[in-house]
Image 1 (cartoon, rainbow, N blue to C red):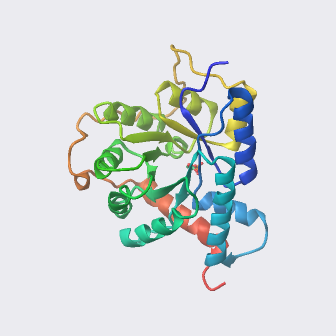
Image 2: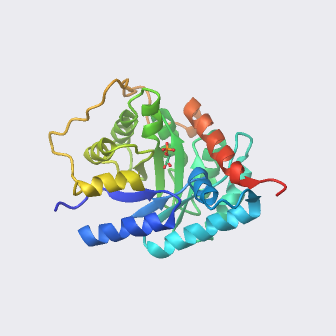
Length: 288
Ligand code: G3P
């Protein structure tokens, strides 16, 4: 069976899933998972499933730590993304403080920051200290800013475009992967493209076809792929989508400017920040 030509991460908040996926990969390909992505919504879902009701923020944070520590034991050589908690008011200073605490949880952490001006400001400082994953990316212009702000990084930098959330509203999310990969061809290769918010098998096949460096896959979709014996796309692969609007390549978005000159705003980024925060607050209540 052909090896998988990109790095495979699991996207989730359940330790058991990490174990099952990694074991499957070892059995089929002789190598474990390359990494894990988590976020506040996924961890909140895990905590809500225990039906213990709301717990204090400190207790919820301790649980987040415990969960990633277990994941880290399963894939000690993999990269594990841990996200900061941020709403629209959270400053870069607060994100830096959180990042410096969370990175100590496990030896193989990558810290996830939102693709907002405060998030990227934090990334500029932190990319000299620890691996970073910029999340909630929806545009080529945001990717150019991530590239520039992390240019002097001394640790791995991931960028996570959320393809499924664009699909959900009728835009062809995979075009953002295609466009970023194309724009980065002119760069120095220091940012790895991590296809996220994967909803179906076609996302996996096309991400491989486009040479996305990494794909993070929810357990359910991983199972579909495994059940079909891990198909790879053919050289003649065509990404079939129905009724999704093309997101064209922007020739005018060029690398090489100051990161603050790029337009970072995207409504899905703002909505994503809000959703992560409110999902977390559902389980981790103030004053509990
Ligand atoms: O890795 C990102 C992912 O967890 C977001 O996925 O399905 O909430 O858009 P989704």
